[in-house]
Image 1 (cartoon, helix red, strand yellow):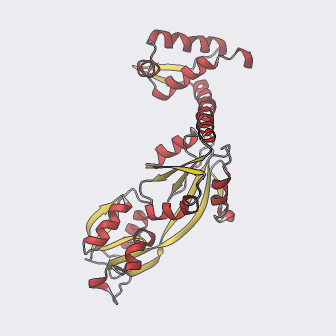
Image 2 (cartoon, one colour):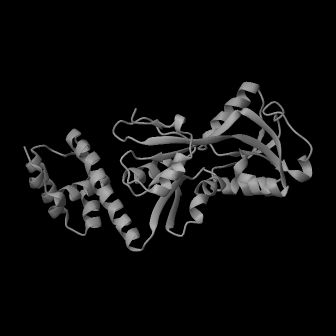
Image 3 (cartoon, one colour):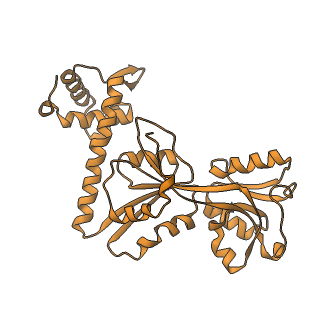
Length: 304
């Protein structure tokens, strides 16, 4: 049995890069080495372990069961190494770096409201990223993000334990231009048949709720636009003249200014907000204080 002092972490690093790309040639190009040299490193690691890590399927390398297990540990080892370097860099500059990811369908107003306590802290440097949930979670697991803000929970995966903390929820509003709708209201969804609507796109967590509600009520609004990006949906709500279904926080400034008004709401429509972290993350006091402000009783772990 191989001992820890016999494990060559250089070989393990090469294995990690090949496993993530699935191709020797591509990994060799990224590592600025030859394909033959890289292949030899992988073979030496397999020889020491006494087990194969890859199987070849055509031109692609596929991980064996042992390879899958090795990859899960390698992700933690090298992900934590990347995090360590980031922390050391931040510490050398006398600052705390907090890396926040948010799903592309999440309201930027909500994100800003959540990080607002950090904006006045001169010791914090923020990195804000947006993207698809799957990509953000991959970066989170690799310790390249400290927290991911999302409007949906993550599925249970024992091979990738994540903590999903409920931050809160809010009703979804039907809003319209004040020039046409001030003092008027509609029942949602009963009065929406034939009304011009701009809606969140199919990827947004609340779109399925809205469609199901309309089908159940037997109403068919006239779809004029479907928009994944909440910032763009905000502009459409402001400038199109259509009715728009969205979280109230998205148009909080327009509602406050009076250019938009709430035309209707439904208790059947709710958007939920979550903060997703890894259980073995480096503890950052500023982040822990933000998370502690959430509803502790609704925290759940996708690890079970």
